[in-house]
Structures are given as structure tokens and as C-alpha cells.
Image (cartoon, rainbow, N blue to C red; front, side):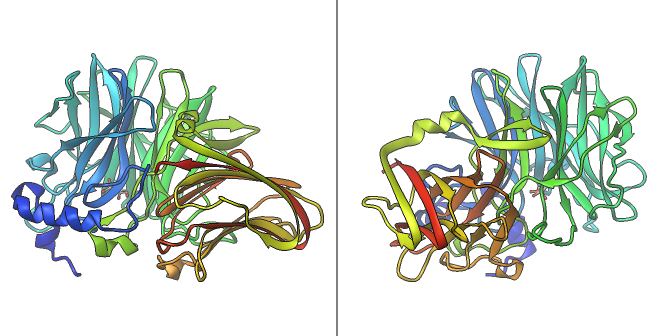
Length: 490
Ligand code: FRU
């Protein structure tokens, strides 16, 4: 279905209850509804926003267009959790119903200040000529969860030398001063980020553009984030307009990081090379927060802009990733599923096998929603790996290719196709004799952590209902494998 501009800008407040109920019923009938991931009740979810811990709970908001699987007028939807695992829907947080955000409450972040949660976000506005005027706004949530928007933007214009692609403030506090990093596009159509400072979250001063070693790297940088882990600075952003290069940059847009400490006074960052955060098909616009016990946790959007997904036909699209803890080890960013996720573990099963040029199944190793940890020791096999969500015709294949020294995720036969123009295989380099795959599988997704978080592949898959099989294989020689699996849910 083609959505007209009018339909995209229809607000949920203007929809009859019965139409909303009909949409909900349609969504509920979708075979690909997730069982333990954050997903929208209806419509389209995109970026995680305002990820924070406040008043004894984690708060995680997301970009939401309620009325269908398209990028229409965006709301902030609020979810909260005591444990980063079980999330409660808390309703709409920010409605795009003022002059300062008339065409969408775009992405932003959250920070506690004066006993309240301050949400700084981009108000997307357009004038009669449909020219965009981004505003940076504040909404404040109190201890009762009541959210009030300030009626005047705190940054009401784009500085000279930048276009109207100017959004997604991420705020942090350093030495008593608030800083906000904002994604931007220079007038010469290259991407960058700029820095603002504030003593009080109210008065903001433009400090300047952040000088990086990537002066011409794509045409827009979205959703920036900056933080330190054990004093090591990490700068994350989602650049658009990067061409594929070997195994890298095959999705429509990228998300990645550089390591380096930002000097807020000179707005300079000396940094490492850019690395993709995720090697799968569906990962974008991540955001991080710090837990009360000092861990840095990241959540991403398990989807990409401008790509059609099979659930579109069912009135909804996308979900968020599981929360991952970020550490820096030997100059590399490592991502591990947060330990709280172990509380999802149900029935446990174990298996071990010597595989010699064969594919094996194990009793009761099957399912559509589970965690699986599987370690391979490669003797002389050319490759080995796992097939999941298998039926007669479909399978999702994870391979360690010991000859090419690559981990390969293949969703060519995963079921309903997604964005095949961008390829159906993703791979990354790994040189190891032992390979461990930790998988979180849900009705329509796979998150694969390789060798204890060295690399991660995040992907949606859309298999048929009866794709429950799991198989282990080695080809061109021998490999041994040990696996442990836990059911999740039902
Ligand atoms: C990234 C993004 C952000 C913007 C939001 C709008 O996916 O384009 O830059 O704030 O989505 O929904």
C-alpha cells in the first residue's frame, strides 16, 4: 500500500477507536510477533531514545509511528523495566502536537537532573513550503511518570554552515557541565557532529563542530553518542552514504564507533579507525546508558530506514535489540548480552558430538524462541556451524569457514525475503581454532554473539511457522561441538 503524505501525518488522536482496534487485531495475527523483544503494539518502531535509569527503573523510549509500518509522524513511546529484561509498556511519552515538534518528535536522549528525568529531543517542524526547521526541545518526566514538554525550544535554529539535517541530541554531564552532541550535515553535504554545552539544561551554547579524522565520511551522521568506559572515550554514530568495502558496509546505512577521548574544550577527538558495531543485516541508531552499578549498556534498532519488511503486510514493523554490555578489551569494543538476560532461561538441554563431514540433529534441540551456546573445536574441517529455524525448505545458516577464516551468516533461505538488493550473506574475519556462537533466537530475529562478544550479527528473519529444527554440521573434515540450549518463554 502506498501511503499519502496526509496518511503519514495523521495523528493517533484523530483515529477512531474501532480503527485502532482493527489494526491491533491485524498485528496480533502476525506470525512474526516477537516473544521477548520490545516491539510496537501497532505501526512502526525505530530508534531507541532516552535510555536511562531514573527513580529505581530503567526507561527506554522509542520512535513510533502508531498507524502503520511507515515512517509517518513520530511519537516517543515509553517502556520501563526493573531488570533490563521484562519491559512494561507505559504509553506515549511525547506527542508531536506543538509548533516546536509539529512534524515529529524525533530522536534524543535522557539524563537525570534536579530529581527529574530530562528528555532532550529534536522537534521536526516544516513550514508552508515544506522546508524543515529542526528544533532541540526538552520534556521533563517527574517521579510520578508525568511528562511535560517545555513550550520553547532550547536550541531554536541550525548554526550557519549546516543543513536542516540536524538532529538527535545525546546529553551527558562532565565536570558539572552538560554537553549535547548533535548529528549534522554540512552545507557541502558531508556528515559530522556538533557540540553544545549548558550549565543547567536550559541555556545552550554552540561550542563548535567536533574535529575528527573523518572529515568526508558519508553525507549525514545520525544518532551520535559519546561516553567513556574505564576512561577510554567511545564515539558512536550512524553515518549514511558509506560504500561497501570487502565484508564491510553492506547495509543501506551503517552504525559504528571510533575509540578516542573527546576534548570538549577544543572539540577535538584523536581516534582509532571506524568499526561497524554489528555485522548482521538489521542494526541501526543504537543508544547507550550507564547502569547504577557502572556498566555501559547499548540497545539498537533492529531495523533500517527505507527497507520494506515482511511484517509491513501485518500493520507493524521492527523491534529493539536485546541490551548488550559494552567493554573495551585490547583496543576493541566487546559486546555481551547483559547478564540479567539469564533470567529468561527455561528448560536446559545439552549435547556434544564429534562431527566428521556430516550434519547432525540432537533430540529435543528445536524451537523458535531460545538461547543457544555452541562451541566448536576445529580439527581439520574446512567449515562447521549451525543451522537454525530449519524445515524442509528453509534454514538460517551460521558458518565458521576455517579456510577463508570467516564467520558467515546466510539468510538466503531464511523464509520471507528482506532487502535482497543488499545481499543475503554477511561475513566477518575471524582467525580461531575454537569458535563459540551464542545465539538469542526469537520468532523473527537472531542475535549472534561470536567468541564472547568479539563480533555480533543482528538480523531479522521471517521463517515459516514450522521452522523449528536445529542442526550442527562440519564439512571437509572433522570438528567437535558442545552445545547448551535453554528454552525462552512458552
Ligand atoms: C534515525 C532517524 C533519526 C531521526 C529519527 C526519526 O533512524 O532518522 O536521525 O531522529 O530516525 O524517526
